[in-house]
Length: 263
Image (cartoon, rainbow, N blue to C red; front, side):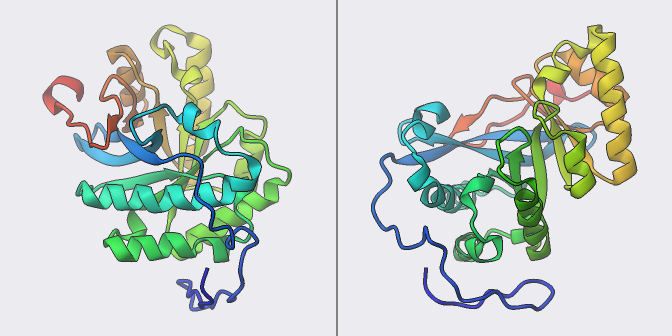
């Protein structure tokens, strides 16, 4: 990483320091590409965002890719994924939000580590304000405050923030006390068959109510049936993702038949 100053939206300068992982120039053990899965806004009958899902160069699964990345390569891999995701989305002409998964444990100093993302966005003409950074609530963190600091820095730079698989991890509501992201994505196990399950309905209604009070948008993730979709429509959740609408498209943005899948 070259020595540069990073300017945040509040006018402050990032320090011209290097992360310990920046000096590793050895190639990654696996080539990557991306599949894109839409997050739809059923009220607007349009694609709100596309989530970039890492794949191998020939469409190999995320598990196959991640199994080849050891701890020593996590930083380099995380940085490379961001750059490729932005480049791919720009090449495909994505005009919705782009949601990128990141590894909190691979971010040493967020105000410095974000530089390559800013460079990629500028190089490919992709607006920073249309990038969402999401991470899984249940990912093991040695220090939850580190994730909170990453989110705060990303928000300062103008990115949106999201917690994925909310309700599946150990931190849950306690994380919302420390930081309120722009978006939470409900874990699909919470919504599977929710239209026929009164316990799931009560729990999810409670989470939706809390998020409404905190100004957090909810994404119902993993929608597979019309009944699941209709439950969330009835409870004011318009952002949804799942096979009911579209499977991920490898190196492509799936088209959605609005007449067939939107109420």
